[in-house]
Length: 194
Image (cartoon, rainbow, N blue to C red; front, side, top):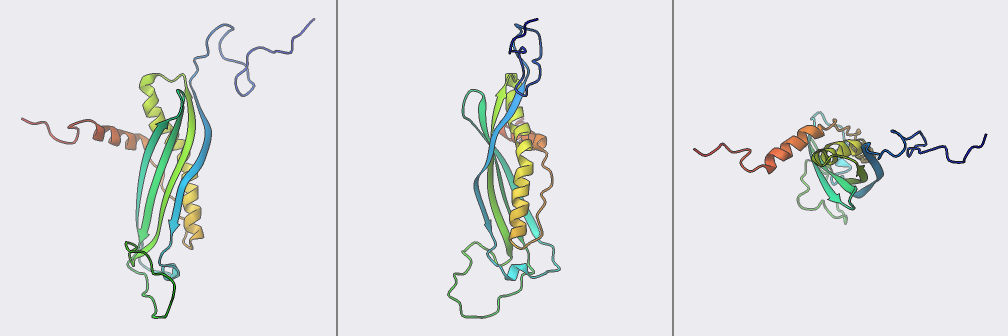
């Protein structure tokens, strides 16, 4: 009995292909080709004063935005932009001293504990997705896959800045997508004229 070196069609992971011979592959695919930090900054302008224990809970403000750029017919760069800051009224006043060190830049309030700005991106290959499902997939599923990595980067940076790690709550990217879609529709937030 003769055998050939080719065991038949296989999928990308070595398993047997779906469907019979001669049938086109129409299975939907979403592949992560890469992920990376495009830009990152962490500021701790009031250290070491900001690192002293305080009874006051800091006010934490975080903004999250999603951006997409098409790189090729099936490849998209999805970018998560996370900006945040923690402020507290309880930072002790600086003791008077002579110093040649530059003071915190203007706009860095006395109560600022830390601030971060992270742009984290991934390149995704999307194949065999119906056109009407493409935009929601890219704006919901791709950021959902990137978020845990961005969350870990921020938690580590905050911890390395001398604070307890900032563990961001999970983000509902479906709600964020629906909110943005509502803002894009003209008149969606204003009542109809009579």
